[in-house]
Image 1: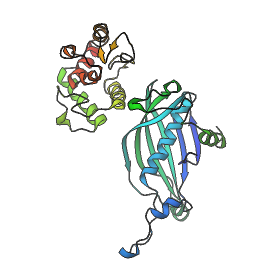
Image 2: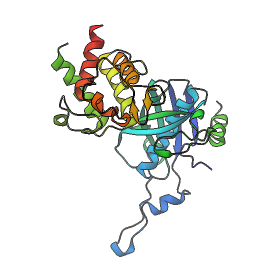
Image 3: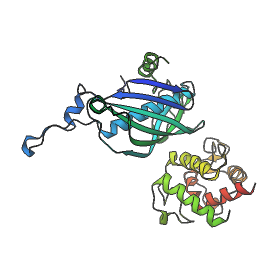
Image 4: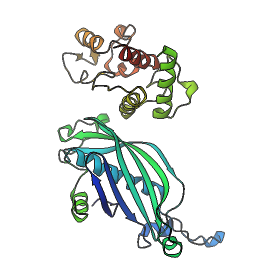
Length: 178
Length: 127
C-alpha cells in the first residue's frame, strides 16, 4: 500500500495545475516521535509534521498532475528536488495546501513549481486568519515508460506495469470528484 | 548577445541546476567531472536554458539521444567511426578532437563543458 500524503484533490486544471490538501492529525503515529517528550532534558512533546513529508506531499501532488497530463501512460518518478524552502512548522490541527504548476514538460520529464500554504484552524477560529503562504518547492520528474522494464540505469529492474499510479491515487482522484 | 553575456547566463543556469558556486563554472569545466552533473541534471539544464534564452531545444539537439543503444554506433564499448560521424553532424557545438583518440562510450557525457553550452547557445541564437 502506498503511504498517501495528500487527503483530497481540490482543483485540477489538466496539464497545468493541481491543488491538494492535507490535514495534519495527532492520529498520525509518527507525529508522536517528531518530537517525543524528553524527560531527561526536561523537554515536552512537540508534534510537528516532518518537513521531508511535506516535500513528499508536494511530490505526490505534482506527480499526479504530471501523470494525469499523459493519461498515466508513464511511471512518473521524482528525480530531483531543485529547491525546498519552508518558513513555519505544520502542527496537528493545521491544513496544508499544495499547489503544483507545470513549468515545462516533454517526453523525458517535467519540471514543476510548487507553493505550500497553511491554514491554522485555531487562528482561523479565534482571529479569522486565512491561508498563509509557508513555502516553495521546485521538483523535477522523470518519465519511465512501461517498455523500460529491466532496462534501468545501474542495473535497476523496473516492473513492466505502472508501479507509480496504483489504486491509491485513482481512488483519491475519484473520491475528490475527478 | 556577446559570448561573455551568453557565458554569464549559462553560468547562472548551472549555478541553479547543479548547486555549484559561480567561480566553479569556468569555460573548460566539465559538467559531469568538475560540476557533478547527473543524468537528470541534463534535462534540468535543457529546461533552464530554454527559459533563460527564450528558445526551444528539441530532444537530442543539445545532448546525444539514442546513440548508445544503436549497435551500428557502439561496438565493444566504443563509439564507431559511423557513430562519431553521426554525433558530429547532430552536435556541431561539441569538440570531438580528444574523444576520437579513445572513443569509449562512457566518456561521451564528459565531452560536455561549459564552453559546449556557450557554443550551442551562440549557434542557436545565430540561426
